[in-house]
Image (tube, rainbow, N blue to C red; front, side):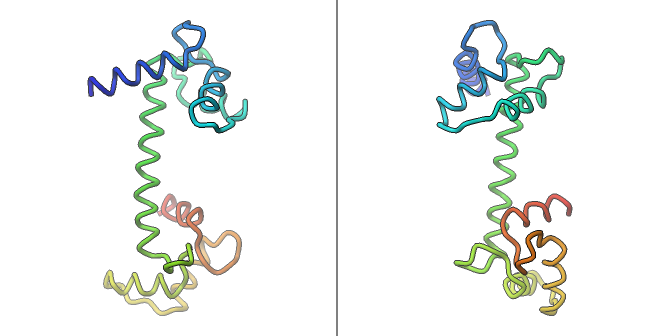
Length: 145
Protein backbone atom coordinates (compact mmCIF):
# COMPACT_ATOMS: atom_id res chain seq x y z
CA UNK A 1 0.00 0.00 0.00
CA UNK A 2 2.97 2.32 0.59
CA UNK A 3 3.93 2.07 -3.10
CA UNK A 4 0.33 2.79 -4.10
CA UNK A 5 0.20 5.81 -1.77
CA UNK A 6 3.45 7.13 -3.27
CA UNK A 7 1.99 6.65 -6.76
CA UNK A 8 -1.20 8.52 -5.77
CA UNK A 9 0.97 11.33 -4.38
CA UNK A 10 2.75 11.62 -7.75
CA UNK A 11 -0.57 11.62 -9.59
CA UNK A 12 -1.94 14.26 -7.19
CA UNK A 13 1.11 16.43 -7.79
CA UNK A 14 0.69 16.10 -11.55
CA UNK A 15 -2.97 17.14 -11.30
CA UNK A 16 -2.14 20.04 -8.95
CA UNK A 17 -0.81 22.25 -11.74
CA UNK A 18 -0.49 25.43 -9.65
CA UNK A 19 1.14 23.59 -6.69
CA UNK A 20 -1.33 24.96 -4.15
CA UNK A 21 -1.94 21.54 -2.56
CA UNK A 22 -5.47 21.38 -3.96
CA UNK A 23 -7.03 20.17 -7.19
CA UNK A 24 -9.71 22.40 -8.67
CA UNK A 25 -12.38 21.33 -11.13
CA UNK A 26 -10.44 23.16 -13.88
CA UNK A 27 -7.24 21.26 -13.04
CA UNK A 28 -9.19 18.01 -13.01
CA UNK A 29 -10.63 18.76 -16.47
CA UNK A 30 -7.22 19.64 -17.90
CA UNK A 31 -5.56 16.50 -16.54
CA UNK A 32 -8.34 14.15 -17.61
CA UNK A 33 -8.01 15.58 -21.13
CA UNK A 34 -4.20 15.30 -21.08
CA UNK A 35 -4.04 11.84 -19.48
CA UNK A 36 -7.02 10.11 -21.08
CA UNK A 37 -7.76 12.25 -24.11
CA UNK A 38 -11.35 12.57 -22.90
CA UNK A 39 -13.28 15.78 -22.47
CA UNK A 40 -14.83 16.26 -19.05
CA UNK A 41 -17.47 18.98 -18.99
CA UNK A 42 -17.15 21.78 -16.43
CA UNK A 43 -20.37 20.54 -14.80
CA UNK A 44 -19.11 16.96 -14.57
CA UNK A 45 -15.76 18.10 -13.18
CA UNK A 46 -17.49 20.24 -10.56
CA UNK A 47 -19.81 17.35 -9.65
CA UNK A 48 -16.85 14.99 -9.34
CA UNK A 49 -14.99 17.44 -7.09
CA UNK A 50 -18.14 18.03 -5.02
CA UNK A 51 -18.66 14.28 -4.60
CA UNK A 52 -15.33 13.93 -2.75
CA UNK A 53 -15.02 17.43 -1.24
CA UNK A 54 -15.63 16.58 2.42
CA UNK A 55 -14.64 19.99 3.82
CA UNK A 56 -16.75 21.97 1.34
CA UNK A 57 -13.96 24.25 0.09
CA UNK A 58 -14.70 23.48 -3.57
CA UNK A 59 -11.35 21.81 -4.26
CA UNK A 60 -9.78 18.44 -3.50
CA UNK A 61 -7.06 17.96 -0.92
CA UNK A 62 -4.69 15.04 -1.39
CA UNK A 63 -6.76 12.98 1.06
CA UNK A 64 -10.02 13.80 -0.74
CA UNK A 65 -8.39 13.02 -4.10
CA UNK A 66 -7.23 9.65 -2.77
CA UNK A 67 -10.79 8.83 -1.64
CA UNK A 68 -12.13 9.82 -5.05
CA UNK A 69 -9.59 7.61 -6.83
CA UNK A 70 -10.41 4.70 -4.52
CA UNK A 71 -14.14 5.14 -5.18
CA UNK A 72 -13.51 5.21 -8.93
CA UNK A 73 -11.40 2.04 -8.67
CA UNK A 74 -14.13 0.30 -6.65
CA UNK A 75 -16.72 1.33 -9.25
CA UNK A 76 -14.47 -0.02 -12.02
CA UNK A 77 -14.11 -3.33 -10.17
CA UNK A 78 -17.88 -3.51 -9.63
CA UNK A 79 -18.46 -2.81 -13.32
CA UNK A 80 -15.98 -5.53 -14.30
CA UNK A 81 -17.88 -8.01 -12.08
CA UNK A 82 -21.17 -6.97 -13.65
CA UNK A 83 -19.73 -7.46 -17.14
CA UNK A 84 -18.68 -10.97 -16.19
CA UNK A 85 -22.15 -11.73 -14.82
CA UNK A 86 -23.78 -10.16 -17.90
CA UNK A 87 -21.61 -12.40 -20.10
CA UNK A 88 -22.98 -15.47 -18.34
CA UNK A 89 -26.59 -14.49 -19.09
CA UNK A 90 -26.28 -12.87 -22.52
CA UNK A 91 -27.08 -14.53 -25.81
CA UNK A 92 -23.62 -15.12 -27.25
CA UNK A 93 -22.84 -12.73 -30.06
CA UNK A 94 -25.96 -10.67 -29.43
CA UNK A 95 -24.67 -8.45 -26.63
CA UNK A 96 -27.97 -8.66 -24.78
CA UNK A 97 -29.93 -10.90 -22.46
CA UNK A 98 -32.89 -12.49 -24.19
CA UNK A 99 -35.73 -14.40 -22.54
CA UNK A 100 -34.22 -17.64 -23.91
CA UNK A 101 -30.69 -16.88 -22.65
CA UNK A 102 -32.12 -15.93 -19.24
CA UNK A 103 -34.12 -19.18 -19.13
CA UNK A 104 -31.00 -21.21 -20.00
CA UNK A 105 -28.85 -19.60 -17.32
CA UNK A 106 -31.54 -19.84 -14.65
CA UNK A 107 -31.92 -23.54 -15.50
CA UNK A 108 -28.16 -24.03 -15.03
CA UNK A 109 -28.56 -22.39 -11.62
CA UNK A 110 -31.42 -24.72 -10.72
CA UNK A 111 -34.25 -22.20 -11.10
CA UNK A 112 -36.56 -23.48 -13.81
CA UNK A 113 -38.66 -20.65 -15.25
CA UNK A 114 -41.04 -20.68 -18.18
CA UNK A 115 -40.21 -18.44 -21.12
CA UNK A 116 -43.11 -16.09 -20.35
CA UNK A 117 -41.80 -15.70 -16.79
CA UNK A 118 -38.38 -14.79 -18.23
CA UNK A 119 -40.01 -12.28 -20.57
CA UNK A 120 -41.78 -10.71 -17.57
CA UNK A 121 -38.51 -10.53 -15.63
CA UNK A 122 -36.81 -8.77 -18.55
CA UNK A 123 -39.78 -6.47 -19.13
CA UNK A 124 -39.36 -4.90 -15.65
CA UNK A 125 -35.96 -3.46 -16.61
CA UNK A 126 -36.29 -3.20 -20.39
CA UNK A 127 -36.18 0.60 -20.53
CA UNK A 128 -36.23 0.94 -24.32
CA UNK A 129 -38.91 -1.72 -24.89
CA UNK A 130 -36.88 -3.90 -27.27
CA UNK A 131 -37.65 -7.11 -25.35
CA UNK A 132 -34.06 -7.75 -24.26
CA UNK A 133 -31.67 -6.37 -21.63
CA UNK A 134 -28.66 -4.35 -22.68
CA UNK A 135 -25.68 -4.09 -20.34
CA UNK A 136 -26.88 -0.66 -19.14
CA UNK A 137 -30.32 -2.08 -18.31
CA UNK A 138 -28.67 -5.06 -16.59
CA UNK A 139 -26.61 -2.66 -14.43
CA UNK A 140 -29.79 -0.89 -13.34
CA UNK A 141 -31.44 -4.22 -12.58
CA UNK A 142 -28.48 -5.36 -10.48
CA UNK A 143 -28.39 -2.03 -8.65
CA UNK A 144 -32.06 -2.41 -7.72
CA UNK A 145 -31.66 -6.05 -6.67
